[in-house]
Length: 127
Image (cartoon, rainbow, N blue to C red; front, side, top):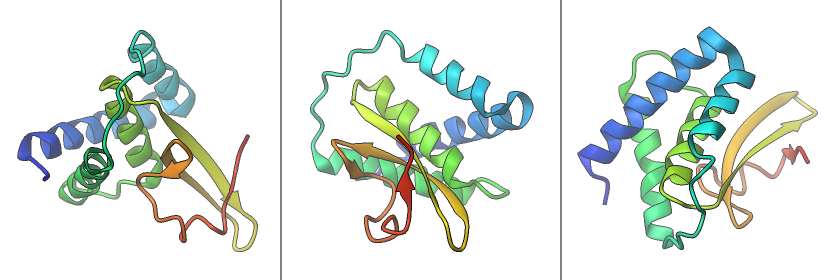
């Protein structure tokens, strides 16, 4: 179940990440977020319900924020929030050739959390 607190936490995280990306760019934003979770042990074994709830709260928050929140902001926020909770998630980037497109998503044990596997079938993940 999605709580208001989780959606608010997601909304704040999304807004901060969006501003950081605009002001300092992707490389510095990503480095800062990695630095913030560097000492977090990834030992938490979440159930799939908790992971789905986290992904849904990001989507719900993105809808509430004025302006467009892209897959990059959503994936960075989901990755950061789950890593902060000790979940061993990975931030994944990929592209498709035709029509050209780039995409970002979060995976847990190889399974996408914030994207449907079918939607990703045209994307090749970067190593």
